[in-house]
Amino acid sequence: KPLIGSAALEEKIVSPSQKINDNQGGISVVNPYDPQVVYNFPDWKIHGLTDIIKAIAESCNVYFYTVGGGYGNIEGLGIYRIKKYLQLFGLGELTDIDLPYEKEGLIPDENWKEETKKEKWYIGDTYHASIGQGDIMATPLQMAMATAAIANGGILYQPQIVDKILDSEKDIIKDIQPKIIREGFIDSENLATARRGMRESVISGSAQALETLSVRAAGKTGTAQFGASDKTHAWFTGFAPYENPEIALAILVEGGGEGHRAAVPVAKEVLEWYFSQ
Image 1 (tube, rainbow, N blue to C red):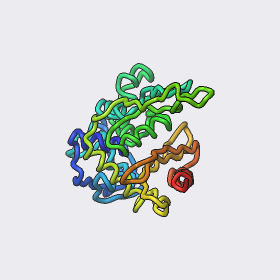
Image 2: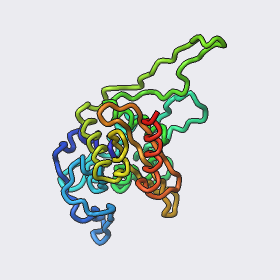
Image 3: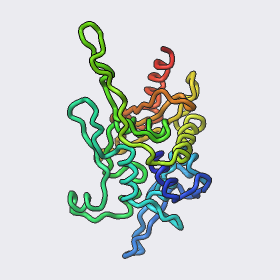
Image 4: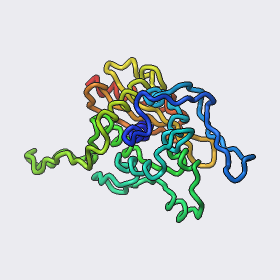
């Protein structure tokens, strides 16, 4: 959602102060061919008037359905712009980390669905993609990279395991420098707004357990459905300190339920350890 929000700001779909009214706890779309058929896309609660900072902090589905797929008088990004920006943040492509067997994940679109599933793309697919659901697949490493890019003002770094190569005398044979994949693809002010939303998530949203840390942290919880059952993966991505970030992390608890219950406590333990060293 912070990635989609940043893209919506960049494309001027919304302004940082613009509010979207979630007064029903979801949106309803009437089938244009059969008005008797109404498709409902739910939220987890009624959020009321919501700007982007509140939307990220409270994980407001209605806000991201609207800026992603369009609703009412707001046009929405549409799936191709969603895919463009998610790929700019490193999703759907290999990171080229120095480890084997990496997966590139998937950011679906109309052509992919037609070729793979032999089905038409519907507005509901765009709504699902707007909140990170549907056929989207991302690795924890990709999510950590994207979170770091938000934290550092818009630089996507290639992740690296090896820092230096030493000989038997501990002399440096090769000092491996940081490698930038891309930068400048989102205005820094738009990323600052996304960061404020992630900070507000810790202050008043779903990651409040991190407010007792010795440093000011920022982050975003996630609860991702998988398979045909009602099971969910528990996610948290975040960074700290908020003002001058040193560490970004992505926590995934497979089948762990809700992000704030399962993933945030893990993040808290990691950050407590890191900042006590």
